Each structure stands twice: as structure tokens, then as C-alpha cells.
Image (tube, rainbow, N blue to C red; front, side):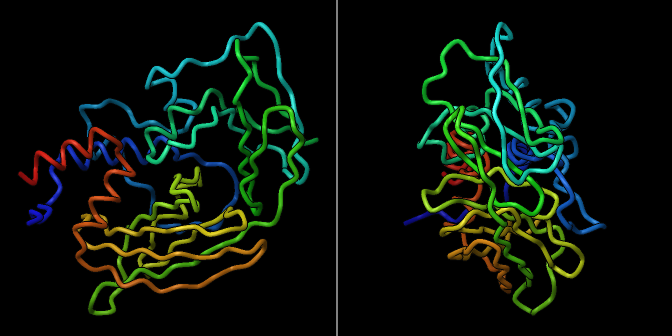
Length: 267
């Protein structure tokens, strides 16, 4: 018989906060709730030090080896405005949690006014890809060196409600692609405002899964959306108690350490 999941401990909440920060960055002008913000890492786990504010900082703080500056790799993105975020990543089909996703990031840069970008060249270039995140555009992904043409984004606008129909403020969404890999989306729009409204932006075409949890992690819900380029979808989610889905949310956010901690807490 499965043991019910107890209220998450301070350790679990702290690990969750750090994991969410790994892919949290401010990369453009997505419309986001003006009165909310992503969960504070410092507030959730002050013993872990200063908040990690972007993916590049996160990769450095976790000891991910950044590239050698001996040479330069460059590329171009069609349809990207200046300042669009470009990730240099290792291809890894097994990156099914935010920590594993952060471990694939080698470097982060931005496009210039022509859509061009540059990275210091790594010692080995095999199996590397570029991921581009630009306001109003779907995430673009291609092998290193291949020109990327960005398509219009898909969007999912979600209203998070509790069982009584009241809005849930500060609910947070994790977004996965069809393979179960977290998508590196700007975090601010993923946090619900006082009306329970949040936005999933920059979605590429295809099926995605959105898991939305209340700030105390006691209520949760999920949906799947088949996204078409340039389309906006409106959904209402009722957040309810669901121990199995909450465990999954925590494991996706925190990786093996959180999975192990959940096992200890539910013994």
C-alpha cells in the first residue's frame, strides 16, 4: 500500500526552489503577472547561498565545465530580435528533470541585431545543439552550426482554481515536451497572479504537458495540449490533492536527490 505523501519538508522545498532557478531567466518581453514573481531560492533555502538568476550562473554554480575560449563558434538565427537567449547544450535524451537539463548547458549567450551569436569553441563539438528562446517565438533547436529559423510561438493561458472555484495565486507550472523533457521557458509567466492566471509561452508545435502546483504543493493538476504554431489555447485547471502527481512534479523539479528524499519521508 502506498504511503501518503506528507507535507513537503523545508529540505524538499529548498531543493525545489534551486531546481526551478536552474532554468529561470529573464529573456524578453513576455507578458507576465505584474504582482508575482518566481519562487525565491533564497527564501526557500537560504543555507544554499544567493539565488541563481540564470542558466549560465546555474551551470557554473553546479560545476558544469564551460567551453574553452581558444576559438569561436558562430551562427545565425532568423527571426530573433537582439538579446534573444541562445543556449549551447549537449544532446541528452535522458534529461528528464531540471537538474539534468541544467547539466546539459555548456554556455549561454545572446543574439545581436542581425540575429548572430558566438560561443567559445568546446574541445569536442560532437553531439552539441543550440537552443534559442526569443519573445513571441517558439523555442528553436538545431545541431550546432545549422541556421535556425524561428516560428511563431504557441501559447497556453491557464487559470488555476481550487476546489471551491477560487483562484490560486502563486501556482507554478512545469512544462514538458512529448518526450517528457522539461522545456527551458521564462519562469515569470509560469507563476499565477491573484486571478490564478498564468501563461505558458514560446511553445513549439507538437504535444506538451503542463503540470501546475499550488505554492504549498498540496494541490496540483495537469493537462496535455497539442500545440500548433501561432495558436493560443485557454484552459481552466482545478488543483486538487494528488500524491502521485505531486511526487512526479517534485522529482522533475529536483531530480534524484529529491526522489530519494521523498522515499525517506514516506517510509
